[in-house]
Image 1: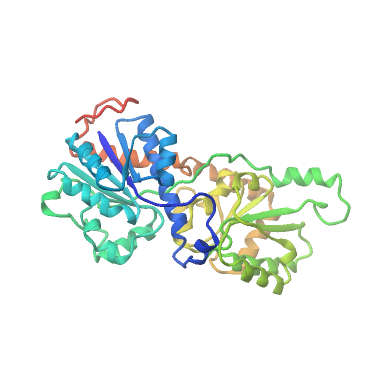
Image 2 (image 1 turned 180 degrees about the vertical axis):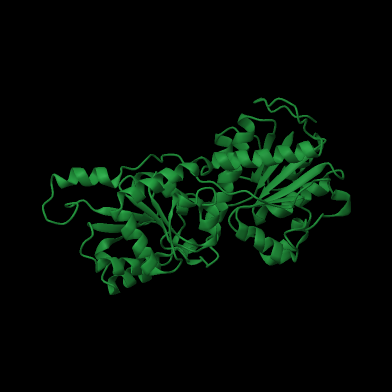
Length: 427
């Protein structure tokens, strides 16, 4: 069964430039969202190529970053560009009786609808995927969205925004698309699939208790734990709604406690708020306990940390902003926001949660985590239930399962056919 994956993002290499950072809004960074969509399209194409009954073709912008990455992995690709590229796409799609089209992001919706228009009625299943952010309201009510048979949403927030913008009740199938494009598919049009993160390089971080025991032999003062510091860490610290201001005020509350081990906070990530964050830390007298880092490769950074904090409230938070601590087997502290609660449904005890936007509640959670070895170990142990679903592979497996189920329901894929790594189409 052939699947056309459409991802037309145009991203740059490396961290966001100062010009990109200056364009950040409270809705998040478009460049970061585009990179995440690229990563997921690439992971899905790789998973389909390497096993199962779905054969991928990746349509991406000509000479884009994604195009180069796909070519390096020898993935089957088509370029989107001028008339020649359009003719190649048209000739390719003609060879397949049935086709599943999966788009990624708002920038790919129109291309998905164009492919649908090329095809014979009821021969094509069009699905859109929005992993971090819903499209703008105009796009939600546009022809590209209304032509879709299925829509994959990365969070409840995305699903609710799409349903609201289209003026439909989620309990019902929001739309059927043009009458001659209707497919006899059961279930809701809006479907939930959580995005994943790149797990490469993550290994279990050393426990604080072991580090503390080693440092006690070389203690030079009467401070509990000698000179060894308990290190809290967070990511995306300088982005809108990251929660870093709540964290700094929580640090000010902890600063007054003299019975605690030595501690510090390392805040990684780029963004436009370095000056205001540093000024607040200085005004509250905790700047000596705060290390503001730029964009960092998180796996090696977390090897020196003892707890991971996700204090933000952004509904379009990147998966690693919460999941990096779980991936490194660290105790996780997070706010009681909707997104974090959603991520913890399978294991509510996998994080020490505090009242969102409440510095005193965060300070209490940090103190309890730092001073209670049993709590730290129970958090890490509970996190085992969430780790298998963290990665890009888990996302790809979930989407492939959805695709196969849809195609079986339509009779395009035999239900009892044996899975094969050769990806032979059934058309």
